[in-house]
Structure formats: structure tokens, C-alpha cells
Length: 127
Image (cartoon, rainbow, N blue to C red; front, side):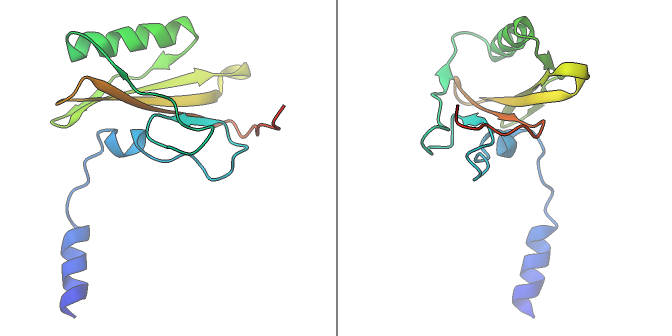
């Protein structure tokens, strides 16, 4: 009974939805889903994180501007004491989301982590 109570108390703790967990999530196991991540070390999935110079807010704006040059639409960033998340969607034909990315700018480091996944249901055939 005590273990069940402890679990309920732990589960009742507030979850911080600041983008950190989403940015560090692993890519889907199905290798046909196009996904890259600076955190997922699986072959074909890993892409190097990068370090920025200067102010974090400026770095977030620069990434949003770069995404816009490629047709990306950045959502307003979300910030917490842990860092700042920038979500970007890349629309396909008809305006539906084709790809979505999240960039994580930690408050205590200048290393940007990211994850980008094809979400329109199209699968890569290996060609």
C-alpha cells in the first residue's frame, strides 16, 4: 500500500512542459520515418548539436529566421528556468504540417539540442 501511495504522490508532481523532454526524445523505431536528432545516437538519426555565441534570445531569433528562409513557421518560444524551446513546423502541399522540429536552448549552456521529424505519414523508401 505504501508503494502505491508513493507512486501516486510522485505522479501528482507537476510536469514542466517547456520543450526539454520533447527535444531530447528519441526518434521512432521505424527507420522509414524520417527523423534526425542531436540526442538519438542511432545510426542515420544522429546530427551534431551546435554551439552559439552571444545571447540566447538572439540565437533563438537567428534559428527562427533561418527556418523561415526554408519555409518554416516558428511558434512563439516557450521558456522556463531550464531553457527555451523553439518549435518550427514546415508545411507541405495544402498547408498541412509536413515536418516539425524543436530546438532546445538550455539556460546553462550554449549547446543547442534539436529534433526534427517527418509527421505527414509519408515513409522513406530508402531511395
